[in-house]
Structure formats: structure tokens, C-alpha cells
Length: 247
Image (cartoon, rainbow, N blue to C red; front, side, top):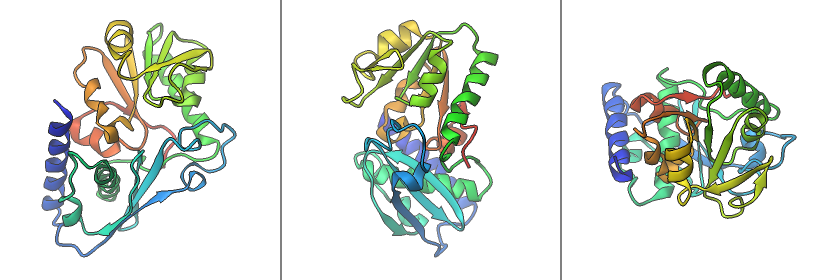
């Protein structure tokens, strides 16, 4: 599946939900805005989360009291109906893609189809990393792990007990040593680190917004996606997802 096919599939599946629940005719508005770092994750002790360093922006959509969020590097604002959301260009417009994903997460949360669509805050990201470490220790003991996306608390927690490699696309991170691990390039080092080396892949859901998530489908090893961005897509596509501390 390529990026265009994925976005078409998600749009069609979401449209089915909207039609089945007669939501397209609603006059309810989707309000999407970019959150400040403090609004998104609060005042964290650790200051190297991507959203705090300006590498990502969080979009938040609200639908009938339910909230859905998505990390993106292409922020945008939108106010309109679900009918309009479904007409957005997801193939070539990354701004529209972020809006669609956030809105989809909000609607699916309202319908009770997904949980954990609001990012954890303040000290919760550290707790999240420890919860993920517990799960890894229970289910993936002695496995080599590829962490996709520089997520500092998860990297630090796992690096103490596991053979781990971390891949990222931000040039400010690539080649740098983080918590004793060199950050590798998400494209250039993908085959060697992910396909040839890793036993298990922990992949940020933010890959959904930039389309690189398709590189982690059907790769012959277990992939666990984490975070709020991929909430709705994981449900619609049957993906394995972890997000233990989000709201």
C-alpha cells in the first residue's frame, strides 16, 4: 500500500462511519486549532520533546464535546462541517491531512469507537514511558527494538535495558547522540535498522501525518504504534496501538 492508497482507504472508511451515523448532514462544526506546547502537554520536566523544540505542532479538533488531536509539521486552522472535512485533499496537502486526522479522532471518540485521543500532560509522558517499558519487558524480553520517531522519555527508558536503535527525520536530531544512542535517518537507515536488524518496532503515530507509516505495514515483524495521532486509523485499519496515559 502506498501513501495515496492509504489516505483514500482512510477517507472511505471514515465516510462510511459518517454516513452510517447520519453525521454529514449535521450542522455541527469541527473546530481545529494549533495548540501551544503548554496547552498540548503542559509544563514537563523534560524539555526535549519535539513539540517543545518547535519540530511538531499539535492540532486539536472538537466535535460535540469530544476532542481529537494529531501531531503534524503542517499546522492549519479550520471551521466547517464533516461534509467539508471529507472533501479535503489528503493526497498532496499535508495541512488538510492533519485536519482530517484530528477530526476523525474526535468523531470516533464521540462515537465511542476509540479512547485516548488527547495527549498526556506534565509528568504523564514520563509515566507513559514507564508503562511502555513494563509492556515491553512483559511481552518482548530480549528483543531488539527499533524506535521510530525521537521520543525522549521512551528512548531513555528503553535504552537502559534493551538493544535499541532510534530513527528520525528531523535533521537536528539525525547523527546526534541521545541518551547514549545515535539517532539514525528514518529513510536512509530504514532497511538496515528496521528490516534487517530489529525484532520489534515501536513506531510513533505521527508517521500517519507525513505518510511514512506505510513503511511499517506488513514488514514481517511486529509493529506497535504509539501516541494519539494514530488513534482512529489504528481502529479502522486493525493496527496494534499503545497509548497508556493519554486522555
